[in-house]
Image (cartoon, rainbow, N blue to C red; front, side, top):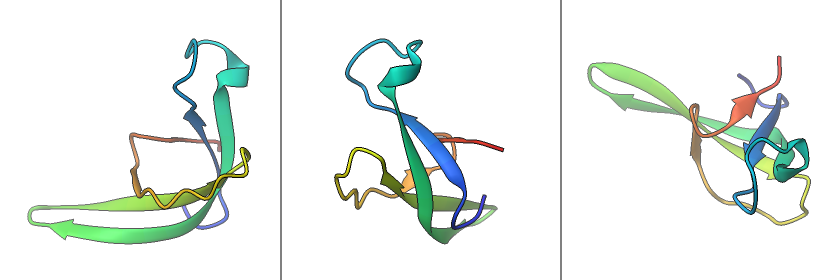
Length: 66
């Protein structure tokens, strides 16, 4: 998962099973979090709803399209 990858997140407004309730985004920032003994990454994304989102998401918070 790198900057420029396409990702999705549920908008939280309605059914998670409905495809139109998922925002599509592009990863714009990635940072490494080092907590011994594990290393993990967090991501910021630009979503297609047009709202700037400063949230740092864990890998399990968003889905990555491969």
